[in-house]
Image (cartoon, rainbow, N blue to C red; front, side, top):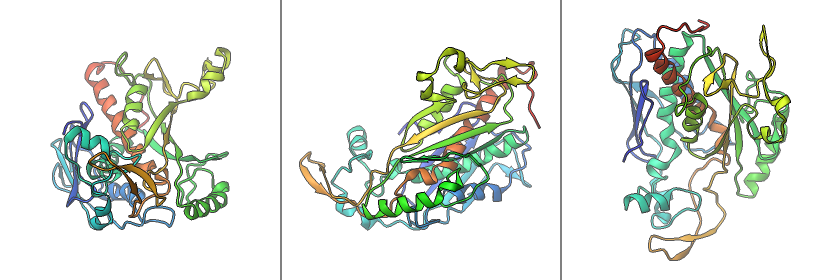
Length: 357
């Protein structure tokens, strides 16, 4: 199976399945002599792990990460960093009734068509369970970029028709929603969603501060293109918007162009990038995630013989995958940006970049 490695210089390869023994990653190309705090990696993983509230899947995984190699006395050595997380709470029996059936909205049918075999237990490699290792890799990238003054943060800005009006990255609530004024509304909405045995989509904002101007490689490796590719690789992401995104369709050039004065840009419709290169402003990216496909409502589907059959999915599933997706998307953005910085240093080592460390 190809396609399990992300990055050019800061390179992350992951392995493992939803109901396998463990998940793992090899991180190559990490700069040496970087202080690596295992507790910070665990902190990022804890933001993603299941079972944290009644609004997410109740699968219980501690997601304790173990660093196997690549560090010495608390610092990176420049050699491959090996990471592993043991699976603890697999319930394979929940999937035995559907082992010969294809779940609508899942990759069951495409994995079967591509490989001629599939792991039906929780979706196997296609499960979002694999994203735990992305979060671990992203936590390492974040620690490298902390020394450069670059911060990556995010949160949910829309669930269904409920939109954040006042963005506050410091707010804390079970929905990871960036507008605390909407929490009561969300609680009522999810109670109704649970009764209907249904799910809902979400939109997440990823914000990057401290980026210098000059990062990105036109024309085929534009920074916004690479970020879009990184975020689109995450399960359930169906659209990525940069800056004003799809709203540019209704804007005129006179309002869309970001005017420049001695203090910088007067607006940020570009999302912090021009011509595929960072412009020194904040980077804003939005990712839209589809509703969870595994819901309790009965439906029709095909079995492995391509006969029409009834299907009812059992198991423990998120009513909104977006609620736990923020640390995953932050991780992918972090790994992508660090990789692009290292690529830039390879070519433009003699051009000064204004990192804010």
